[in-house]
Length: 202
Image (cartoon, rainbow, N blue to C red; front, side, top):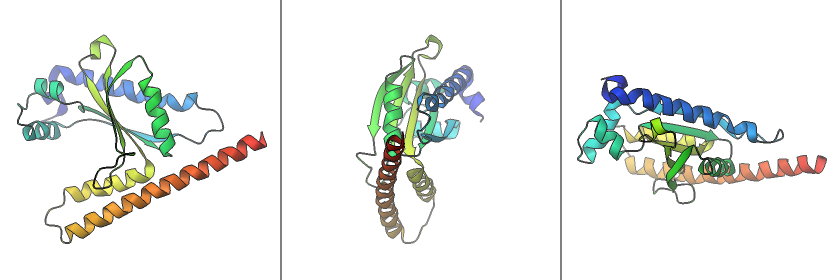
């Protein structure tokens, strides 16, 4: 089943919301100073596949139709923002929260409070202020490029079957996540030193 078939009349609205958020986020670097290091490395967007959506509803014991999906989930639209530095993750989140064209519904800070497996990311659930999109929600994930690399590997491991030494692998992934978090902090320190040098030069 294609997304167009599953979401039906809602599909054009989902695509509109996806495009709106992507274009909005792409304006963010333009408000930064010329001496700022690139805050956003890249943006990924997607409409949740029918298979993933129906599986999510099934796990919750809900009907698998599109009406139930849009009423009971918030990630039919998904946006992932990959940043250079942890500080930029929070700056972008604050910028989004202050906007009047979207409404922040929920914020989950897995950077300050990581998941037990080591996962670190900032998740925002938003709704659109525009009348045509008022019933549409979206999930925005913000993370550093370092943790995005880790998350991609961890995600692949999650769907592997009959993995030997699974506990050892999970422990190693957790250790790597902690080390990556330490590297992110070190990179943030380097950035601050670079900015300090720029200001002193001026």
